Figure 1 (cartoon, one colour):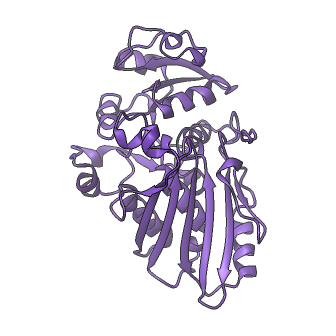
Figure 2 (cartoon, one colour):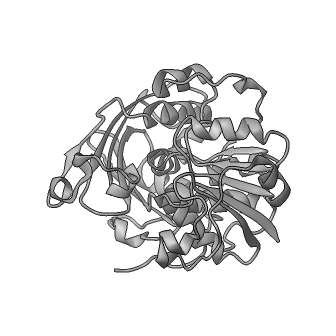
Figure 3 (spheres, helix red, strand yellow):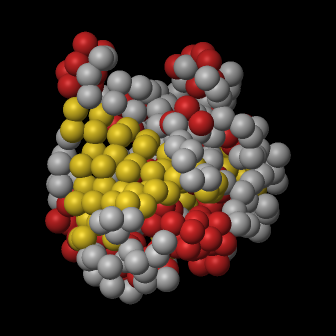
Length: 340
């Protein structure tokens, strides 16, 4: 059995990890860490968790002794400090942004924290379908952000084959409110969200440099991403619409995508004329991608949907754990979404 631990288990992502790992046939959860609720049983804090294990404070020695893999569902800047303490002991899957960037100066610019000694860490960007060979032996896996997951999987076949004609990629995304985590800010209150739709962090969203980095890594070229995220009055889900230019015909694009993803358990390419809904992925690790081309302008429209808490966070983290421990990727994950 794989001994697993979760730091930040009472947050939305931590609870999604708990839901998935409790039903994983190859995992035994040994450690639950919560700074705010340490000393209490988890089912005291959240009765619906049905987990009577005690929430503990951060004890690095106990983690090293009792965990083969540690999931860090923590705010940016905190996971890095945990990783420094556990270096060369427990394998880490980090769900924050702390290990996503090749250049720590980019992290400093966007997250306002300098990561001292960053170059000493061996880290892998954890986009499961693209980097599985590197993930197998990784000590630290940087779980991708939710928006980048939806965008990169939609673009990967074109990028890997250098089939884009423009160096600017336009992305319009809609996300459920859980993507912001547990916040007390008035802007995330029911009266502000319900019945409305609004953009936020236009052009300046922290996921832009992550997307640009990985797009360039896949294509070996520099691209700019013009990204507009929107907050939608729903709890979970992301729908990303991506606009690019290519000389390929619709038939050629469909053949490319079906060939690229034909062995993947979680990525599904829809037939022409079928468009995905976030309801199709609710609570699951699946991804649906739809492709449309405007033949007059040469613009290709890619539409992808994921659940931001599952494939966009906890589900992909569990998929990465499966890869790291050389067990089938779909183990504990291959179930239908909750519908409707």
